[in-house]
Every structure is written in structure tokens, then in C-alpha cells.
Image (cartoon, rainbow, N blue to C red; front, top):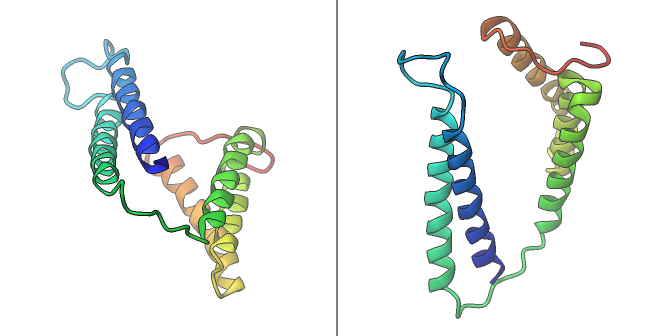
Length: 146
């Protein structure tokens, strides 16, 4: 039941994303190729197709009992960490909040090596920051340190 409701909700969300992306102001772009609406539309279509497949599968398997997954608590912990990350990214900046978020998620997922966790949690956000700032010329939210 929950799977059916969730997949229907995702279908509605994907339709809203697709509609919202058609409302982008593209007068300044011209006919030079793909506009800023292309990527959101692709993501919305993919989300809709996958959600529709999940919806149909949940309808077909309605008579089967759902099995409780004991790892669901980790899923909710990651969702909560992501919500906190979204709240913090504008307040303390991309780099610091992403390092904290990466470390928390890696810890929740119980990776074995603490040293590798720390290295990855620091190196990956710095690499992304450098890539977006210098290669793509996209400014990321600034905060405490950068």
C-alpha cells in the first residue's frame, strides 16, 4: 500500500517538475541548442517512467505481504541528514556542510575504515568545489571558511 501511494506521489512530483521546467525564461538563450530546461525535463521523464513502473509493480504484487526491512532506519537517518544538510548549506557554506554531510552519511552506512572515511569526506567535496568553481565557473554557497 505504501509503495503504491509513494509511487503515485513521485509521478505527481515528476509532472510538476516537468511543468515547472517549461516555465523557464529562455528569451536570452535563443536557438543555440539545449536550454536550461533540458536537464530538468530529462530527470522528470526518467522519474516518471521509474515511478510508473513501481506503481504498476506494486499493483500487481498487492496480494503479496511486504517484508519489513530492518535497514529502513538507516534510510531515514540519511534522509534526516540530507534535510539538515539542505538547511546548513546556505548558512555555513557548501564546503563545510558537504564535508560534514559526507562524513555523517559514510558513518551511517558503516564503512569499515575511519581513515578512508575522513579522507573521502574531505577530498571529494574539495574536488567538486574546485571543479565547479574553476572548470564550470559556477559559484557555490559560501560560508564560514570558503
